[in-house]
Image 1 (cartoon, rainbow, N blue to C red):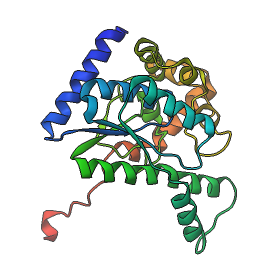
Image 2 (cartoon, one colour):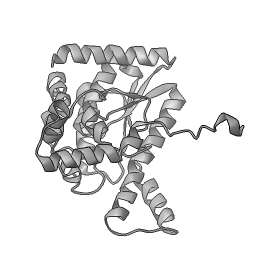
Image 3 (cartoon, rainbow, N blue to C red):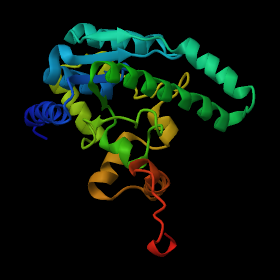
Length: 248
């Protein structure tokens, strides 16, 4: 990959898309992870002071907070911190007062509230400023639906959506993202100790290899194809029940 050409293209693409929409800038969440770091640096190159990064702690680890702060300090990114932990706990208590589910499903139910709260915060900020919301999902994650529906997948523009995870790493090195961010295990930070690869059951290297070549160990291919099939609804707009003309 020609990282210089890709970086310049994405900066130009982001400028053009926002201008076409008649918006004044962009807002995105900065988690302390590599994808949001790369997206934030590209967005700042495109929009300067009209790029706003929101750090949105929600029972987040100290490491993630530190890495998010490190990124905005290193690249002088205009940012705000909005603490969502108290809101999250209040909502969870309210929801579970009428419906509480234990076990793995219950943990995931609670965890998915976090990216949906962040989505609300990002759109509040974007609407107030006439900005667009930039997403940070990459091609690898989108292909298997590794995102919370109406959470981190609810954005106006997917800046990294045509980049495999390995290509995001290439861009990160080119852009000078701090090594602390590049080298840590990818995690959505949904709960303590959670990692992307642990939750997916495969590695990003295995996923990227399959997406490039269609090949992989049988058990890996089965996981990827199953996740892709089950997540198809995340990559489409909600279907409309078109009524046959003879019924109208």
